[in-house]
Length: 134
Image (tube, rainbow, N blue to C red):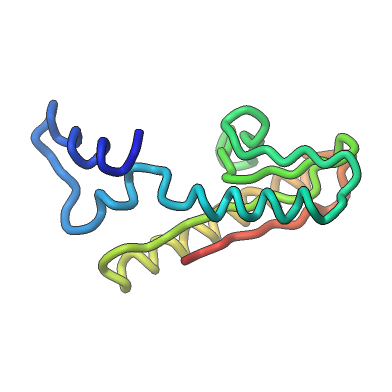
């Protein structure tokens, strides 16, 4: 669903619509270009047998405090988890939105590293965790 479609169809059933510019980011797809760019950079870097997952399949990873997390990019090489990346953008009110994104980033990192320490991604060595915020 594109941003335009999401914004147009939002509230049809409930009457509730996103306030201000929130509809510009809740439709999904706003950061796809950056996800594609990062994936292309990884592929061109020469990582042996790299599988760069940018679609739902292969980028959903287990967590510790929650069952799973859908990352924007998961990079696997030789069966090992090499890196995961989350991409977020912000439109509108800076203060509250920024605070929410910081809390989300810290929560994601805490969940990911706790799962790693508990052996969830064994035998992979410590992967790289990235968070692109724009």
